[in-house]
Amino acid sequence: MAKVVYTVGDDISTDVIYPGRYMATVLPTETPKYAFADDDAFSQKLNGGEVPKGSVLVAGKNFGCGSSREQAASCLKGWELIIVAPSFARIFLQNAINLGLVVVTAPDIEAAEGDELEISAREVVNKTTGRTFPVEPLPRSRQAIIDAGGLIPYTRQRVLEAAGRS
Image 1: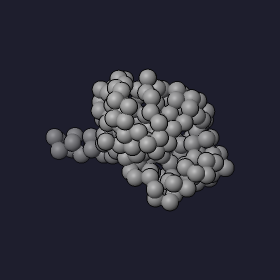
Image 2 (image 1 turned 120 degrees about the vertical axis):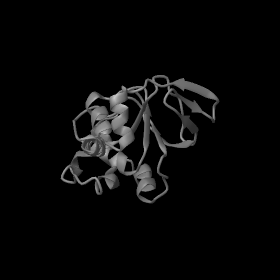
Image 3 (image 1 turned 60 degrees about the vertical axis):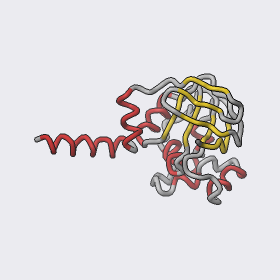
């Protein structure tokens, strides 16, 4: 079970997730400290260690719209957040998959900060409200990349498997 630690509305841009003034910072080990940097309260919770790995950010439609900056997904991956939203911007979604950020598309999701969610491949159950929301699964090939931890670990795994068969 995972706890919702933050909620945001529709059309949250990559500039809100990872402000442009930090674009010179690209290392995945450094980007997390700038996640939602302009939201002092949430940023302080993240950087103060108050948000456990596996916590959930529930967003509205079109999460990650705007620029193609990979840091928006990287900074969230660094905190090991799970992002649940009705929909994701196309480029953000691909960046998230490539980095192994857990993203869940639940078109009708309703949850508030503090709610406890049980997330599976088929549904999100809000244990706090008792409501269940169907999930639109990713194609198996994309889910396999997330499950491996991102495109690099996935590719490494596939190459090693192929080498073992040779």
